[in-house]
Length: 160
Image (cartoon, rainbow, N blue to C red; front, side):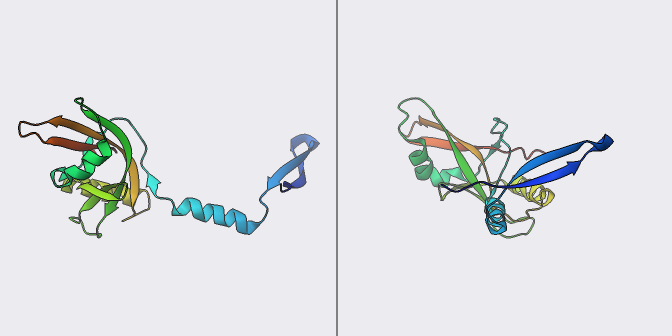
């Protein structure tokens, strides 16, 4: 077990009061910088509101992936929470944004939502960055043709 390194300092406060402060220090500046770099390399996770108002489009082509994520839910509708990666493809206004869950593409953002996401990314200083948000796999009731249809709701506020 390592020893905690501290820095002791005398600090002069107002009215001639002297305070003795002990400040814990990182073992080295290199360790502190590596922790900062690790935090900076993590993708930004959008705040969760629990509304799931943004829907992924094009999920019809990815029903097998969504069914695997939904798991066995019996005759009830699926309601599975997960985390989705929002992956911008290019930097143009009309460039699509892929929605991935566990590394698999499960849909796209609608063009209007993709544009709003790019605008929000610029606001937070991460243009074209991969970000994450909470997601919800919904549906899975059998259709008249015996197939299950799933959808994906994203917990990210992109409204105008």
